Amino acid sequence: MIRALVSGTLHGDPQARTSQNGKPFTTGKLKADASENGIVWVSLIGFQETGERLATLKAGQAISISGRAKLTAWLNKQGEAQAGLDVMIEELATLRPRPQA
Picture 1 (cartoon, rainbow, N blue to C red):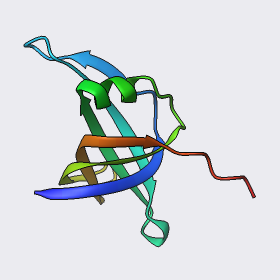
Picture 2 (tube, helix red, strand yellow):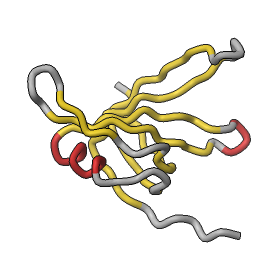
Picture 3 (cartoon, rainbow, N blue to C red):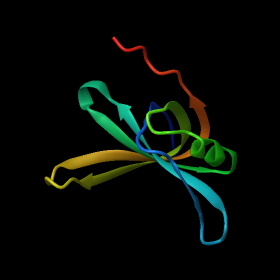
Picture 4 (cartoon, rainbow, N blue to C red):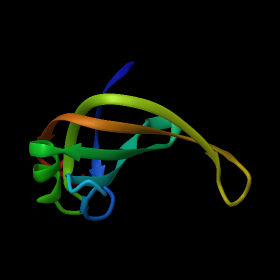
């Protein structure tokens, strides 16, 4: 199991959903800046309290999350290899935005 701690900004508003068996959960996308390596896209899923908290946040909010992670890879529309991360959130903290230079 991979445990990850990732900070970044929410890309789009998180979406509250309900599973087929009636369990609520929330999904979202986190944009993490990997400096010289570009951007890493992190797919988020939160259940129970973390899901409820994630659902209250809006696009552009700076957050830090930790949880169980799985690496993903795919080809974009141009055929270039892309990498990402799927994280089941266990802890979530909101962050203050960076001051603009």
